[in-house]
Structure formats: structure tokens, C-alpha cells
Length: 263
Figure 1 (cartoon, rainbow, N blue to C red):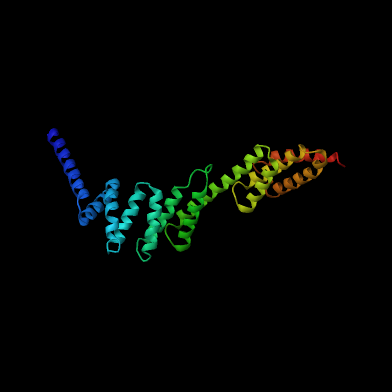
Figure 2 (cartoon, helix red, strand yellow):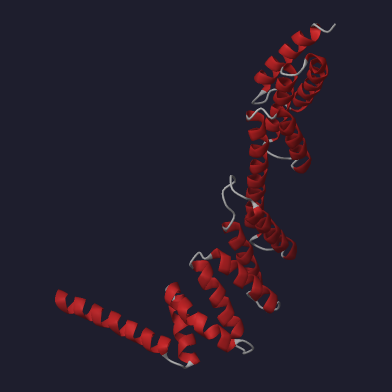
């Protein structure tokens, strides 16, 4: 019985492959579309995609084109080919503005760009693009059931960009390029006023100015220490008991001691 069962399974598989190859190599568009849809619904996306690639040009301008184009785009999405999924869904949303699938296509397009966003240490061009696409979706569908998730994705992407900018500025600090670090921290505070890295930025800006001061020519030390004191006051204004408060207080004590010399 087991041998018969195995034989039956093999015969069914061979029959399925034979049907697929016959349709794939054939000239008729209808059977290709029918089998492609069947494979798509069965989750056999790679095989379905090969058929959709053949028939998409044949259906342009026809009543079935909308359905075919949606399946085509979603097949890429299911296969996690997010470059092509994002492009094809965006194309679908523009081509069929009245389609009942437009919102879903719009969202999956934006989410595809989100999936393409790299880790924070790499170039963030794709992250910027993903934020733009998600924001376009949010603006277009403010009542959508996807709104909460879309806002979370935007927040995640923005934090990634903020972290990238913060790490670049901190790198200047660690390389003892304090002037550039301070300028970078200033730009950061303008660009990302509500950033979760704000305390770190204010502290490292203080530390950069302090280290710049004590390593300067004597004629520059007093002015730079006074500037560092101002940065300390600004830090304490917002973070009286923050993560870096103890370190900031220690720097402030040393600044005060050094400034006493000039009195």
C-alpha cells in the first residue's frame, strides 16, 4: 500500500509538472492566466511569476489587466523581491486610481520601500525614500486601518536616520575633531529637536567643547571654558538627573576650578 501511495504521489507530481511545462511553452494566453492565478492562490509564487511575466504584456489595455497586474505585483511582494514589488505596486496605484485594491497596493508599495531600508550604519537614501512613501500613504488614507502600523514604521525609520546622524557626529568627537563634532551636534539639534538621542548629543557637545578648551592655546582657553560652561547649563536645563548627569557635573566642577585661575 505504501508503494502504491508513493507511486501515486510521484505520478501526480509528474502530471502537475507536465501540465505546467505544456502551458508555459504554449502560445495561448488564457490557459497561462488561469494556471498563474491557480498557482498564485496556492502559494507557488515562483512558478506563478514565470507565467505572469509572459502574460502581463498581452493583457495591457484589456479588462483583466487590473487583476493580472495586482497579482503580478503581489507575487514579487510574496517572494520578498521588494525592489520590484515597490515599483509594480506603485505603478498599479497610478494606473488604477479607482481600483478597490488601490489602497492595499499603495500601502504594500510603501512597505516594500520600508523593507529596503538598510541598517543605520549604511547609506540612508533608501530610508529617506521609504519615509516619503509612507507619509504619502498616510496623507492619502488618514482613516486607514493601516494607519497605526504606518506611523510606527515612519517613527522607526526616522529614528534610524537620527541614529546615523548622531553616530557620525560622535565619531568626530571620538577622533578628537572637536570643532567639527560641535558643528555636527548643533546641526543635529536643529534637524532632530525631539530625538531620543538628544541627551547624548547635548552631553557630547559639552564634552567636545571642554576637551577643545583644555587642549587649546592659552589665549583661547578661558573663552572656550566659558562656552563649555554655557553648554553645561543648557544640558542641566533639560536633564537634571539624566544618564550623563554625573559626568556632566564632574566636567562642570573642573571648568569652575580652571576658570578660578583667570579671576
